[in-house]
Length: 360
Ligand SMILES: Nc1ncnc2c1ncn2[C@@H]1O[C@H](COP(=O)(O)OP(=O)(O)OP(=O)(O)O)[C@@H](O)[C@H]1O
Ligand SMILES: [Mg+2]
Image (cartoon, rainbow, N blue to C red):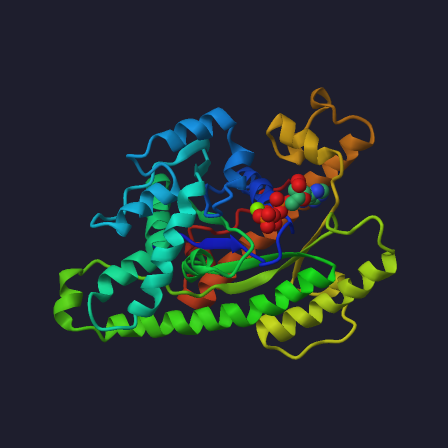
């Protein structure tokens, strides 16, 4: 059984994708899930959040093994094949496949393989390149018996992100209540739809490829390319302090309708509030000075203690953060279960990701 993959994505930058993945990864381990985080953003911010700079430097120096996502797929640019991923063990239930600034080099390879994969010669090699992120992620998850793969990507609609998205079962969309985030959402919806359709054509092309070609690679599997929208998360930190609250409210009120119209192709519901919108996974608080404090201590906000400097009102904010992230992790877990059931017929109780509802 393949491990479910959840990607956080918006082509508007700075909406909190990396911070959310980092915090959720830790929270998932608290509710009994084993997680693999994969950093497929060539900026490698998630890697920098988890690891000290010296550690990252050591990883990047070793260019012979699959110790970053780029090193795993790089041999495909030549005559080689995917390298087995080497995960960085953060704790017994949390693993990281580090990112790599060099990953940008692979973008051209992915762009070239996209049209060629619809041809009739050497389709296997093109599809191997296009599905390489998925193949690597599944190898990684199998090694550590992971329940879920969380993927971080950069804010663009390029070939790297297209390959990540075709590997993805579900997409969560962080955004802010502002014009730019809404525009990002309007671009994202049609793009996901188009990538889903175009990937299906490529899968069909492989199924119709000459038997001789398919027989040479009997165990070759391709991702489904589901990229189902799981919901959106509205960030309060992206609110500009010099902007009137009214402007924020105006954009916030548009989000439920824009999400329905552009991402789900459903009828917009005018004036629906986010708090009553089932597609709103969470409103993420502005954590202010707790953010640099947590970064300095290299731990999630909800793990900060008095000794770290989280005292007085900060201690309350830490407790609230724990409650909020726990609720969010449980909500995502149950939606992933439902999605697997609806798309693969996998019953929630059989799912590797079955929600473990231990009392908090
Ligand atoms: N809840 C929050 N409260 C306060 N600051 C936050 C919060 N979430 C994220 N930030 C800050 O906002 C900035 C952008 O966050 P982050 O890097 O997670 O966004 P991103 O969407 O991954 O950005 P990019 O598109 O560049 O990859 C960072 O400086 C981060 O520390
Ligand atoms: Mg980021």
